[in-house]
Image 1 (cartoon, helix red, strand yellow):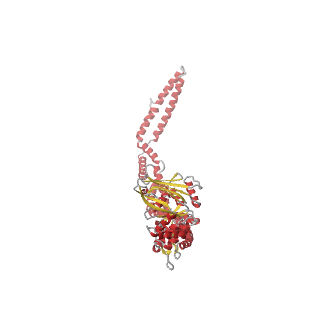
Image 2: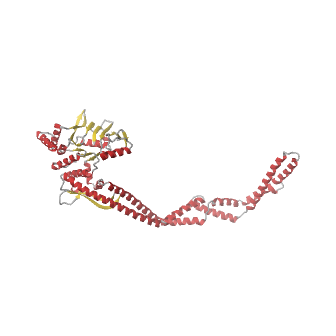
Image 3: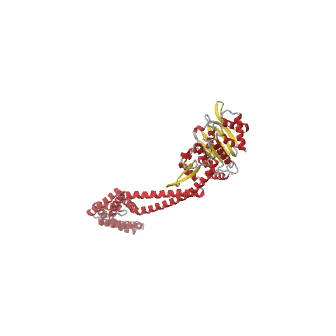
Amino acid sequence: MIEWVRIRDFALVDELELELSPGFTVLTGETGAGKSLLLQALGLLLGERARRDWVRAGAAQARVEGVFSPEGPAREAAGSILEEAGIPWDPDEPLIVSRTLTGDGRSRAHVNGALVPLGVLARLGAHLVEVSSQHQHQALLREDEHGRLLDGALGPEGRTALGACQESYRAWQAARAEVDRLKRLEREGRERAEFLRFQIEEIRAAGLEPGEDERLRAERDLLAHAERLREAYGRAEAELYAAETAALARLGRAQRELEGARAWDEGAGEILDLVAEAAALVDEAALRVRRRLGAVEADPARLEAVEARMETIRRLERKHGAGVDTVLARLGAMEAELAEIEALEWNLETARRDLESARGALERAVAAVRAFREGAARALETRMAEELAALAMGRARFRVELEPVEPGPRGGDRVRFLLAANPGEPARPLARVASGGELSRLLLALKNALRDRGVGTLVFDEVDAGIGGATADAVAERLARLAEHGQVLCITHLPQIAARATGHLRVEKEVSVGRTVTRVRPLVGRDRLEELARMLGGRHVTETSLRHAQELVERFAS
């Protein structure tokens, strides 16, 4: 429940503190006094989106603070949310929440002094307070909201089935997308396959070998310069071996001279060894030159064949990239793509079987959700009959209709709430048969029939719109009974509802130091009777209206 709220510089509120008690509390006051401002301030504290114009003119920021004491499931949920957010909290202590809003639209939220994201505050607020306001009357007329409301009545098994249905729908979507992809490839693949086959055959026909382009380049250089190479090798062979002044002959003469010198100088032996080693190297070099000379021959026919082969490779390189290795890699990629296209028929058939299986799983999941919804719908109809009877609508019949539609992530049902306002009339959509007063009572009945009893505080804004007389008495009785198990706050204009309350707050607008401000004043005793008399008889309070107010209070007190 809400124990305490403080509001500063919020719209027309300069500073306001409220202490709230368990049970049934009403807020009354003239139209335009600022009752809706209090609801907006509470919404800000619970994580709703902020508006810049909520900051009081001339103030740097607006601030709303609240102290909450959640119990039961609400306390457990709050503890889990705060633990997940890393915020320490002793469940035996109150929960302190605050939010500030600056004039540029920025806001900050704190829980127990720790800064929290707005999403965390909104999740926490949903377990602390449940607000029923006028705009929800119109939401009740939108049939797309009916499914969400009914699903809120599902038990744990029903929610599990709904989650499984969402997974099955995603799996079916993925299977359908794969079939569509393969069908598109099949349409495009025929022309593509012909192109790939031509390209693959062209490369295969060339019979390329890894590194072949480098080997051909070396052979072409040899053949193209054969005459010059033979001349160079011939001259080299002469200089090393054949000529009279060849290096090998001169080294032989040097060896003979050194052998003679060794007879008188032992140091000549080392030099002789070096000369002998040089002679051996020169002899080996000469041998290799003769071999290369024998290997190099002018062969115009072979040169022409090599040039033609290299041109074939260049033509393939222009299509597929530089280098034989690149062309061969491209060949492998095209062969893999062609294999995939040629396997499309088999893959498509497999994908179609997978799609059929996914569709079957989705239909089974949809049927499971429908079964749980049917049970929830019948239970809701029973609870609504009880609630409507308590709200002076016992002759009305509320029905939940489930119409099969194409499956989606939330199943395959269109949920509609129908109402037969009078006996003998067919049940019709709410938008066609429900008046404003009936919608107010339907909303209250649905809140009671569907709501999570773990939320300790319920706030009703103008739930009495369009009703009066005995109907107002019935609504007041239902609100009072609801407050026996928690905290109920209600903004009302009806004295029947206000007289039922255990706490009464009057919202007033006054001018202070040249500024309009909104105040909230607790009413007890004579003040409360005068407020009830005003609600009964208008602006002027008379002795008659005071006696009527006293009678109301005494009747409901008994």
